[in-house]
Length: 218
Image 1 (tube, rainbow, N blue to C red):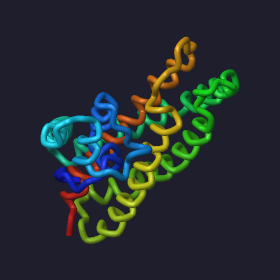
Image 2: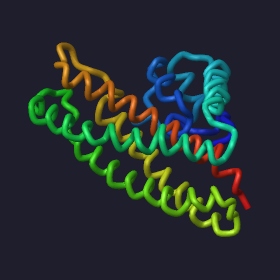
Image 3: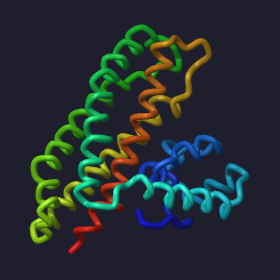
């Protein structure tokens, strides 16, 4: 997504623009249940100015490009260290923590039932995706071999769409990472870390889709 306008849906923007999900939460806009709504419609339902909300979203989009190193090799190294390695490390302990919270608090009406299974699906999909990038896509990019990159990039974009749906599912199963009153420390750590993981994943996909991949278009 290179620009944002009123025709785009809340769900699409929340899962592709870094910081948009948190912005929607602050304004009381649901992007998992109301994700099919246009931005202007969602703003009006939340008693917000559509123009003001669109301006906030565009500001987030502009800010999201500032983190990216300019050089292609430097950007690829940044993606490997800041996102690939971080995702692997965080999922390794998020999954057992989710199992623990579900096991201990499964009878609670706000328990995140299904979160551990969802994180395991994300782990399996993301590991295959990142491994393919590291073994095939990134080396081709580092050699600037544009001739054979069209299909691999298309495949990576498709897989990013799958991960975007996982981001929406994380929002749904945790109720927007909303903790119940009296939540234990494990539950608090789970939601804090899962929210951070979700935000990192959106930033990761954004940098690839909108900064790295366009350098090899055509």
